[in-house]
Length: 187
Image (cartoon, rainbow, N blue to C red; front, side, top):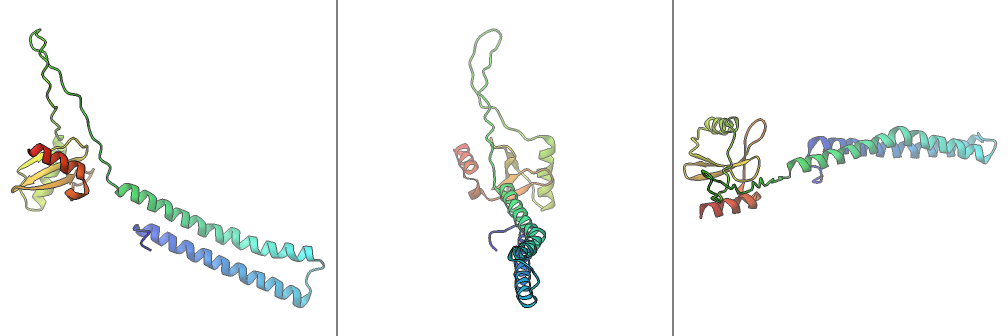
């Protein structure tokens, strides 16, 4: 069951498999019951009527129980795929073109890299998050990747993902692009 890391997906998969197995068991019991009673009591006047009744007794539980089990297994797969997609980090590089400046009619082409800054609400979230942990933020460095920042605390760097509700501390080795950018920035 390592395939399902989401608890809801795991639960739906287990219930779906149990429903499919119980449906297969019910189909087997109904087929056995039809054959044994048909042979013992000679229910049917012809072979075609016997096979029609057996087919009806097979399709009914397959339709009601079997498909609902397969539907739950498919829902578990869908939930797991969405869970995996949500948990994979996606880095979006915000590439801003270099700025050309002119001063007093003279064409001075000065290229400078734009500064990436956090909004005031995001800065407040980061400061408030670390205040709750009892740590004082020395500096916040914003890499050119949306939703991430590097927080300096007592000469220690922390990679932070700024979420909608609360920032989340990440590991640098999971984000090699940001780590490489930060090392190049320090040099």
